[in-house]
Length: 144
Image (tube, rainbow, N blue to C red; front, side, top):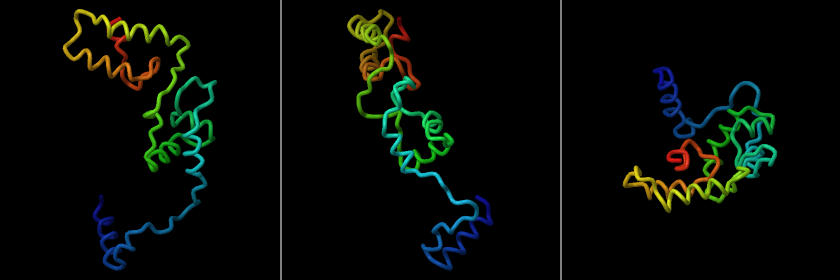
């Protein structure tokens, strides 16, 4: 933070107390984006034609006709993380049964080179959505 910025805020506080720290009206065009519409659409599942289980900021932005940064800003403001739902999500994979069988098979018959914390990793991977992982691979990707 620059010295002039610190001096400005210190002077505002000295002159007006806590009220001096409130945002002043901004210049320029007022915001026309309705955060409530973004949040409402975030809570609705995406159309099936998209083939995804939750919205990304880019997909929802395109759907609403706003920028993805606008969507991300609203999500941050209201602490939303649609990719971290705590509810069960069905896989969009056309053949999830084969992958479920692979993971269960690995759990029941672990490979010889598995490490001592194998059971912990199996337990955590089976709670993930099969077919789409958010940055981590399933056991089937590692050992099959």
